Image 1 (cartoon, rainbow, N blue to C red):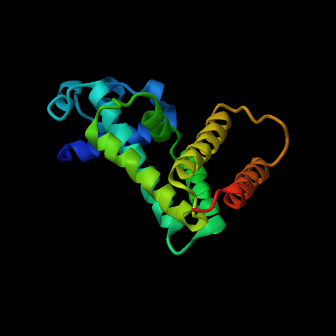
Image 2 (spheres, one colour):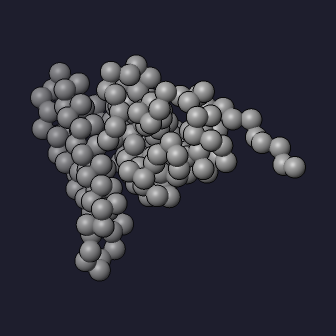
Length: 194
């Protein structure tokens, strides 16, 4: 007779991540998750209130995991090289964890303090990367927003199969990112001196 594994919230969330990355976020259900964990659905309610809470936990985990990937990529780099590294890490994360990334952008309760802290850690990481360019405070935030728009937009279109032409998507992304970086250099030259 096989022994059942001890179920805890971290195991539940990890299995949910595997499921959403394999089948997509919209396919996630308490029933499917229980089946994959080889438990009865009521057992999951001993650890969480239901699917909305699980999706919130996935959102938080997704943002934290993305930030960790970007932080690791940024280590020891600065300037243009750091922007390229964190951007590549972002793209790679979404390609490896499409369901988890989707959870981090579609369902979260924006008032959740854990989620806000995780999101803020990504903003602060990008601001630190941008320090090399000596951008004024407001302009630095505009650049964070611009980079996020590029990264989220590109990965979202890619995940939806929107790049159907037989051209290398990585090359397209590289051109897009280089154009953004050239824009940062242009802004640096045109900033009023403080």
